Image 1 (cartoon, rainbow, N blue to C red):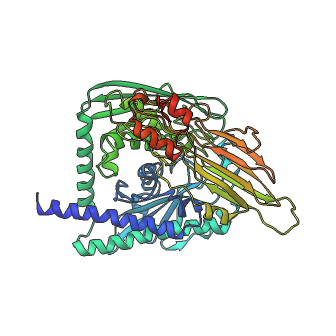
Image 2: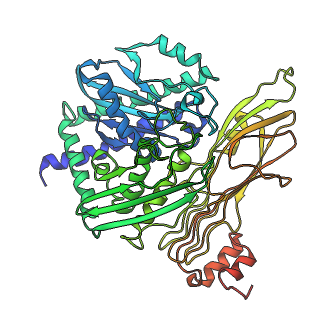
Image 3: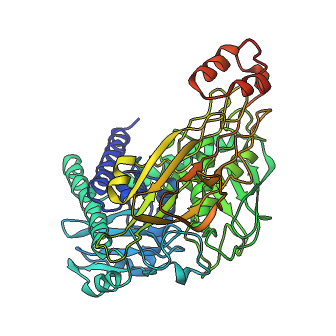
Length: 549
């Protein structure tokens, strides 16, 4: 190994620390609770051509992998010849950014001694973007909020007051939204400071050699395990709830040599409501799921993403055309890895998990005082909650864990601090994990009530209610989700609904599927599950044949 290669390897590792500090800055300064509490963000470094060199581990695949495409759109739209020191650019265009209007992507060119050397970029879900708010009920993207084209937030260091005024005039919480934008700007600035220090230490003037090394090495390391897969075509499909109609998702993996194509032809057409998915988001999560199984040790960058070719017919629900509503594109987008991994299981057995809850059970709450003249104010609150993951070939699934998004569950204390609600219950849901030699992860049960003198509306964006996570290799399905009031009144899994004063909303999150024949689960593990309250005595008998209770 040459001295140059060794230096590049060290610098590559240092870049991960650079972008992690970039992400940490965003978490510490953001106004949006989904960023501060859940880590719903991405941060990364890009070369002059807009190729992603390094990404922060903190963040979601939907943001990071989509951002790997979106920076290329910035480079094309702005033009490299028009990039000036002190510039900052932004967009929330769903088809050029990360899939819906609530995500703002900000790109800052990096200069060294007056010479342009690359870009820093970050994405975060902002507090509000106007329109109907975060929910699936819009009929087109124009109803969903303010669409900001790729534009200059700063021009050679001078902030665009026109852009700021337009944004402030179109959102419900202007101070918080503009605060989020400055947080994104600070995030990129922090990354640039650390990059300059690293370049001083290694005495390099640009990033071109390092970028080529990172991307070429990663591409080669990803193609090698693809080449070890048996050539052929492998199909899988999945039915999910959808909104106005059930959705059929279908994929065919075609493997030939070191080339892998995932084609989603046969998937349902677009919905009239906001569950549609722009192709950038479908590609982000399909790549993520496949890469996790095939090349998990290769760092994520343009080189490691390129070998996965993802296609879907334009106009299907996973490749939505403008101006389709896309606000909750994550619901179907988070299910894409399960679809792809189900096909991969047929050529790479004993390597991928059973299906999981997958889609986050996000809930947007709008609390309002019953007495409008009381002087008390309302509040907008966003909670992220997760069901169980699918069991793995050699391990149980993870309970109340976000896969594939990777975000954290938001703190109840922090959530209650932002508005007039009480969360009375938040615990693991007994019996929700699918039975198997390895048990599926458990969902959770959450009860939320408006405080005295308040009511709230909530935007439901839930799945796996009609179509629970399926088990694999003999494992059984996880429990389906359920939405209701505490008095038993059944509510819908999607759309805006009301919870009056004195009532409690009860969310029963779905569990993950089991893996392998339940009869093969060791009896001591069944007894341990029973003692911990993970399964009921009835399940211990019926699913696992445990009679000596």
